[in-house]
Structures are given as C-alpha cells and as structure tokens.
Length: 158
Image 1 (cartoon, helix red, strand yellow):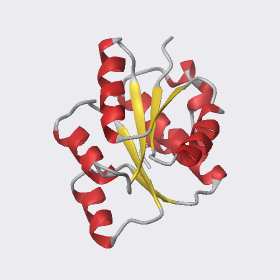
Image 2 (tube, helix red, strand yellow; image 1 turned 120 degrees about the vertical axis):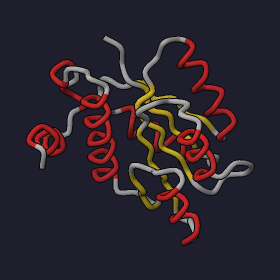
Image 3 (tube, rainbow, N blue to C red; image 1 turned 135 degrees about the vertical axis):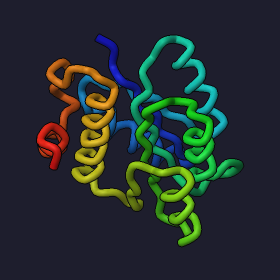
Image 4 (cartoon, rainbow, N blue to C red; image 1 turned 180 degrees about the vertical axis):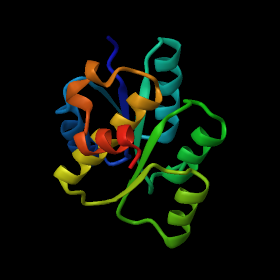
C-alpha cells in the first residue's frame, strides 16, 4: 500500500522544518519539503514519474519568485495533479491574494500563520480523508489518515 505524499512549500527554513515535523507525525504519509515553488514543481514531476500519489500541497504565500497563489493556480489550471488538495498557509496575504486563492487556485483550505498545531493536523487529516474517498481508495486501509467527522459527513452526505 502506497503512502500518499504531502508537499510542504515555504522559503523560510525554520518554518518549513516546523511544518515538516508536525505533518511527519501523521503515520501513513510521506512528507516532502521544498523551499520554492520551482523546487516543488520539480519534485511533483519526479514523484509523479515514480508513480507516487500526491494528495496535498501546503504552500506559503509570500515567497521569492513565484507566490503561493500563483503556484497553486498553476497546478489547478494545468491539472498537474488531478484531485490534489491544497492549503495556503500565510501570515501576510492581502485581500487580493485571498480572493485569488479562492477564485483561481481554488484552495481547499486557508490557514493563517502562526498556525495552531491541533487545527493544522485536523485540517490536513480532513483533506486526506476527502482525497482518499475521491481517489476511490478504501478508507479502512488508511486508519491513521482518517478524520472521523469528515468521513462521517462524506459517507452520510451531510
């Protein structure tokens, strides 16, 4: 059974390390960290070429070069990873950035920095639960990735 991949993108090494540590605590996923959108795109192509399942990208907004919303919009518009869930993680987004995140990148979730660890983990597990069901996988094969309330809502149609 393959482990879904979570890609974390942030140009601040200490933030990236903290995010990696938190998400790597989820059993049953593989976490890959990248310091730029360009590095993340390269990793995505390598992972896809290797037959990996990329479930989620957690991306900072304010980075040198390509901003988070631009990167997530590019992934969405070009269907680089069909079914991909995305989180925009930022402390400095403008109102325009937020509107673009929703309308263009169609981010799955928006989390402000500094994040609350419990909220971040619950959100990530919720998105992984959605991804597992949408991918047609058996959720019972991924017990450590399932967020129970999300599973119940999706199965019961609530």
